[in-house]
Image 1 (cartoon, rainbow, N blue to C red):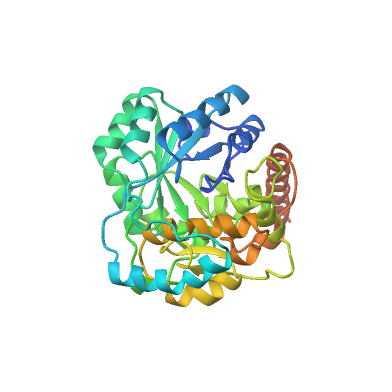
Image 2: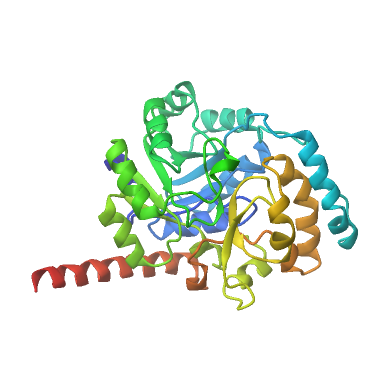
Length: 357
């Protein structure tokens, strides 16, 4: 990260904003208190819900933290494809004794209202996913003292972020759990993402911006690797998801190391956008047929996912997880930050000793 961003945290450790409840105020505050940079995820929340969480974090810590926003989505979904998928999911609704959600519940995720709050009562950092905001938006945040970063998955997206005036880029490798933060969903490119180390090198040569690297990071040794590759900090999602402070469902946390769930895949089954999760029954049965229709499919399956969680059935839940999920450690968030920092130092010392030999 740039000197200004580096000053926000003692360690180059960022807690990923995980929408859906995991990135709650208690988790963000614990990470920031321990010397990392904690994040709230505003995605899927109302503007007021986001603001209430901001106030909760401020009540728990005086350390810097960030908020992540989802960019409004263009209209490109095929209504007929959405209708066909709804028909396919009717059996799921009957099984869980619920109704499918309304696919037309909105595409902008309350972006303007959330931005207005963040301009009126600024936070230290705001990041963006699913697109790059305009220069006007980034300039307005800069004027109130907020640093900005844009999630990117290609060198071209990083260049767009630099042109728009972002302070940094969050470089997301294909290994990352949850949604791929691509700026424009392209079904023809499904599964063709770039691994984190290779992507860092490409972005490092494409732009001059500081890099926050994310995707499959679970250990301090991996953090050392991405820093050596050219990143300025590492962002950890799945690693923090299992912490006691995390707001993730207990079934989700337990699934990370459950031998029933041995691998991850990218799927559109739950949201209509590529997202990496533990392979379960729902993903196997519906993933091959899910259309490119975000957020319509997200809205449609929201009731199913909630019903599955209520029924204690992880086979019907969206179990977002990165490729390193088997390395999850159930440690308090503050302790995990300290362990990651210690592992980083140990790795650097070991590499230094080898170089001197």
